[in-house]
Image (cartoon, rainbow, N blue to C red; front, side, top):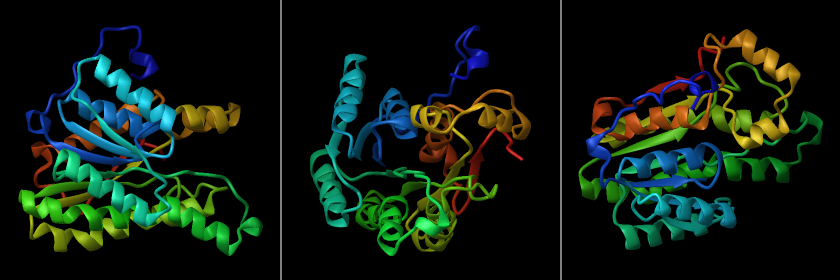
Length: 264
């Protein structure tokens, strides 16, 4: 919840009946925005599966949701840089849970680097985290969506590169390609009633962002650039993703949806 709302009554948020029992696969689901999405889908009664490299955090998240009485969450440790391992995990999830109607391509890391320090090996490794998994997850899950008669793919982009953010060139290159991935597949997948959209967050206050990057200068930038005074939270991104996965978003495809508090 945004800090400005913390002292008042908890706001009533939407429930989407079409998400109950819907099967959802999320990459990078253990922490940050990914964890918020896993939790949000579980609260809707969806059957959620996710992969992540963080074993302890994955287990803790699944245990928390089970303790609250939500449907069991399927998860597996997976290094998405290994395409074979990623697609094997997806295959196992399909065998255990069933075909997935929704895919959320969330996994990413905005590690900082200088132009002069980037080697070919480092560049390839950044693409292997921030760009390549989305394509191969789509490739693996689309056949199941076709069997279901439709689906929803949500690719996580970023507004950072659009605002000319500095210090994460490789991340920006990868994230700027997300809209191309979304738009280039929309017509092909649309024939099978598979929707594909981009959700581009602004500066979201995950634990990682606050620990590594948020300082007095960052606070000033938020105050200056955002139209809304509250800091973006992971749950704010999850709410947009829920809508696009639900039947309420049935005619939305090939679009970019920004959740950035009006960052200028």
